[in-house]
Length: 252
Ligand SMILES: Nc1ncnc2c1ncn2[C@@H]1O[C@H](COP(=O)(O)OP(=O)(O)OP(=O)(O)O)[C@@H](O)[C@H]1O
Image 1: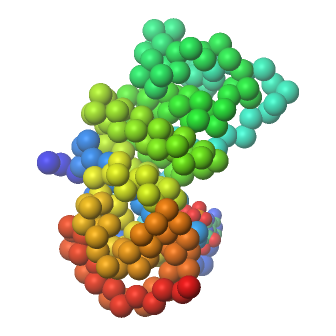
Image 2 (image 1 turned 90 degrees about the vertical axis):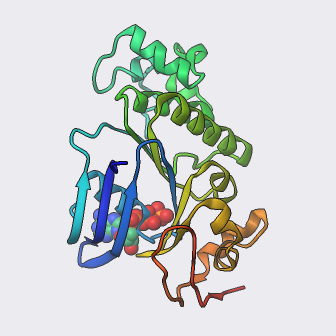
């Protein structure tokens, strides 16, 4: 199957710093891939490099010709004094027909809130509206950068379920950055752990049972905290399929 995006050995500079090195990555049509990693580990930089928003410093990056990408941002800064309904929001930056708007709002279960003000929406409703707008592009690849920030755990789980449904019905691939480890593990085909480089990747089940993953994330719902204290003192096995060869030193 031809990859939508493929990266071989890429590195990325932000200012004078090399924030990503030796990254091999590809995503196939219909696949759900999640990137996890500590703050500052280069997750957003990788997304931006993959879509061409920032340059790569070395390596080979290939995107499928005319690749259609839908993007769901982390959050949205809205002027609370400016009236803006959900329906009008979908017209930004390009006007869309009522039929198109209805179709995407139906997909995300947001049809009932079409006339509501954007500033009155709950966090979960807002994410669904932003997902609706991303779907207007009829994306082959949907990209979400920490799209569930601010949602509680049930809210995040429901949103990821929605993403899985969208993948099934729309047939798009999904690439997302997330901190909700316990919920994304269930919803992803492949998980990539990033910390300036790919430290570990594979199918969630394989990654979840790998000793290195447990050392990174712990086994309980608070395991995510371990990630932030992760000391990268390990060797790498870049083969796909979840094998993580780590000599890991876990703080705490
Ligand atoms: N515009 C920029 N100019 C210079 N350095 C930057 C820029 N954007 C990010 N960086 C640096 O690049 C590194 C990676 O940042 P990036 O935002 O990709 O990480 P992240 O894993 O997405 O972090 P977080 O989880 O905190 O969102 C960080 O050290 C950050 O300070």
